[in-house]
Length: 316
Image (cartoon, rainbow, N blue to C red; front, side, top):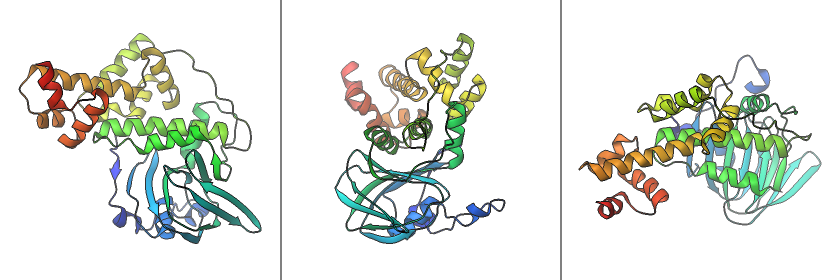
């Protein structure tokens, strides 16, 4: 599995994106993160990306008075905090909105507009490749072309919550973080297809769970010590399903998403190691694939309400 890339923002964002020689339209567009860095004149607070799911970036930027040039990806934004006026001008058309909790702004790939924002903004952005949106539309049997509408401070608490959740998945475990982000990106894509295209979109209902044999193999993969085995693409491919249908069928069979199942499994592993061995918390964190003891302790506490050390002391 391709592990998520945690960018050095300044180094990455100042490098021009590589154009696709076979696509003249794309050759004239910038990568979304590069264009955002240019117009916002800063680096993101944090960013995570991988080839199959695009990128999630959290920015805190000042006033903006500039033209956003055409980008290769769809850009979907929401605002964790704050209140700010947004003005988007395309030719003689002007759209005015407010950046606030529970709204979204959408810049479809290839579009360009003049933006005027008078003050600071706290914003989370998803850079969604058009190919990802098209893949999800096909997998979900969605009756839509997949063309997104422009939105400027458009009320949509559902998409806003999903995007904020997708931005808050860096738990310090490459496998868990990537799996969760893949699931959320696909879920966000289905939401965009349903609520932000030019025609109503109907998604086909779940067709039941996984067969016992396929479920057993999926759980074997998720239980593996190799992060390469828990790629959502690999899990779905082995089951003979699309990513969209695999996630739905797995949850139908287990009551949990693949990410939630893996997180619970790793928690149980951690508890067994903490209770039944003298292994240090640092070693437990490393054995379970966490980048540091701090990251492991934060993830453990999020699920149990206790630090690993306090939990070990209480149960032994």
